[in-house]
Length: 264
Image (cartoon, rainbow, N blue to C red; front, side, top):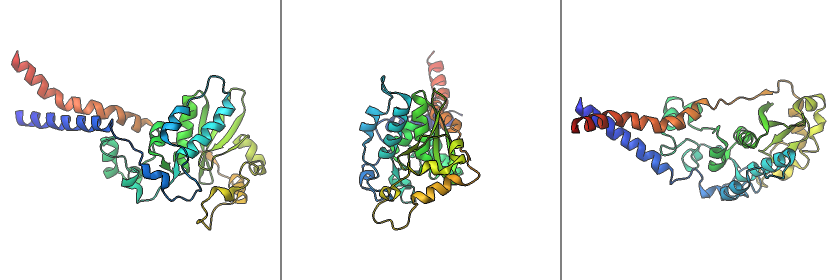
């Protein structure tokens, strides 16, 4: 029994050490600045610059902030989701970041081997993802700054619907760095309303990419039926970031209890 308690104590100590080590590491790989992606000048903002400006300014109205936040997410995150980045860019959450999410990658690799953060700060720190990850980051950033937001799946492309205090709604697309000053319902009535926002779509892509979506393609995506709210439940992620600290102390408690009880 005592041997087992000691094993538990050292296991807890090891996990606690992993958590502490994580404070001194970052999910962001500096190589991201020069990574080849489908988009031209994909990452143009450092994480430090983004952190200094991602809060809404006191004199900044909601719509101005929503546009700025969309561009901020677009410029600090790369459109990248290749298997080669699982280790290089921490697409699989590393042990030192969250050992529960890391272990989940073994149990359910289809979800956790390449993991999309629900937390906007984690998503932007790592700095990689496809449209859904960028959209989740923007949604979290808007909500943290007092703007209601939800995710929408537009023919497989995920965007953000922002609801402002005057009742108006805009569609924000951080993957492309675009915004459409209409609600999803208004767009469904007339998909041509998005054309001006996505004009010059050819300029978004890197020169080496010969085949990509055009402005016409995106208008057609918005006019397709079946657009729906896109949900990504943050419950397990939120729980895991609390549990990684609780578990070590639970493992260490029996040994510490026996030790101090014996001293009495």
